[in-house]
Length: 102
Image (cartoon, rainbow, N blue to C red; front, top):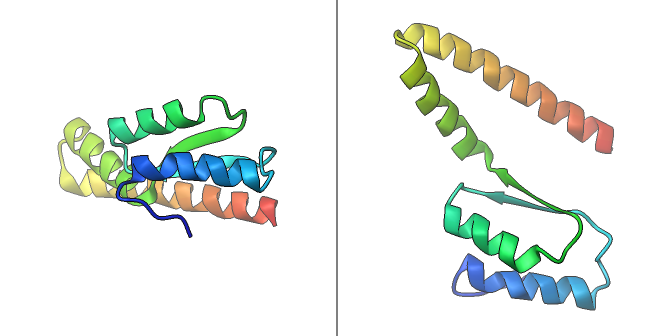
């Protein structure tokens, strides 16, 4: 377990752990809430690392879809129908990724 006062402060500890444990060949995947300063901190801390990615976490991804669809569509019922279809597709995609990995 790695611990620090903030997420940004724990990033050098993650890097140190990777170096000490010789895990430089693994792919790092960060799930974040979309805060730009956090995204920038990860990029700055791991720009030397060859295999890493940053993804928006599920909650914030769905909230972003809801907000964008609300702006684009006039009726709530139509928005909810489209949102349900998008969420089903995302769930299917995630399940397929898990099945491929296992």
